[in-house]
Image (cartoon, rainbow, N blue to C red; front, side):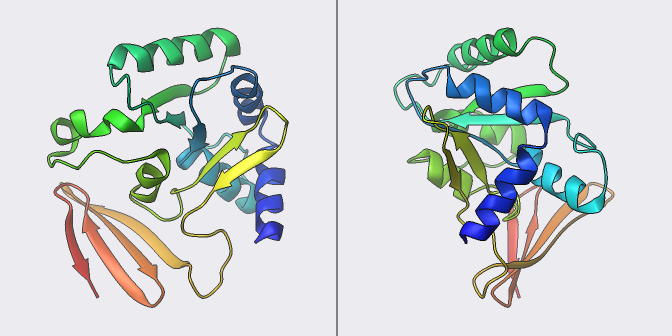
Length: 194
C-alpha cells in the first residue's frame, strides 16, 4: 500500500490550501491527535485525476480530533478560531469537530442518535462513504500519518463502487464492498444489504 500512500501524499501536497493547513497544524502543538479528512482529501484526488482545478467543488476542510475531557462547542470554536487566525486569508470554510462529542448533536442534525465514539479512528470508520473515510496528519517531524480503514488500493478488500443519489427528499448512498452492496437511506439511516 506504500505506493498508494505516496501517490496520495504527492497529490494532496499539490494543493496549496491543504499544504498550508498541514503546516499550521504541524506546528500548533495540539494536546491531541487530529486528522484532516473526508471530502477535501478525496475531492482533491478526484480533481487531480479528472483534470479539474484542485479546489473544484471543495467547500470546506474537515479537521477532526478527539478530546474526551472537553466536549464543549466552545472548545471546538476556540481551535477553529486559532486555526483561522494562523491561516489568514483561506479559500475554504474550516469545519473543526471533536469526534468525542458528535453523539451530543447528531440526532438533532440527522434525525437519529448514535453512540459515543471511543476514539478518533472509530469516528472515521463510521463516516458515510468508504472513499471519504480517510484522514491525514503531518507530524511535527514532517512525516505524514494516514488513516485509511478501507484501504487505498484496489485489492480484494476494497470498495469497488460508491454512489450517492437524491430523489425528491430521499438521499441514498450505495457502496459495493467485497462483492456485497450496502444501501443506506441517509435521511433515516435505513440499511439494506444485497
